[in-house]
Length: 194
Image 1: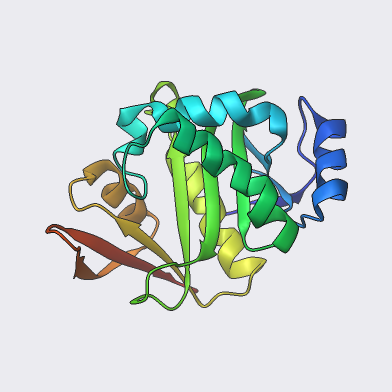
Image 2: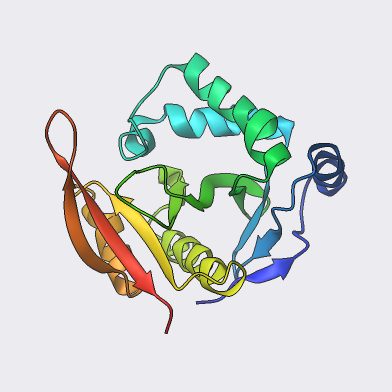
């Protein structure tokens, strides 16, 4: 697993620089072999909303599909709450210069998990080429190396077999299933620093 912290190549470098100055964000650009992760810029809003409005993506995210207005408000909070306070790292994910996904590593909001968790989503058109594995590996490496975390966690719907298999292939282990309010459960997986 590796991710290089540095300058992302591609569109919007000056806009990203100005956004970082204005917001005070310290979220770094990350590069993998095929992906560029960079802090969001305002021009990414429509891509972000389109990703989260796709039910093939949003069904696995947070509280599931939301209204377009809610997804636009969520994007706005990246600039009004997350970046200015340096609450956590959140990135736009690009492949060959085009937006293909979303990534985060953040302190878990769950009361039953004291630690950081990775969150990632790829557009369906970007799946099936190993980009998800590359993205999850980069987030995990960043958590261990840059954030000095002994453990990096992921919370996954038990029905999301592709994500469970991807994380298991990276060395995440199933810790437990956590009951959800209203039924169902969330699977807690943990990757320990080697």
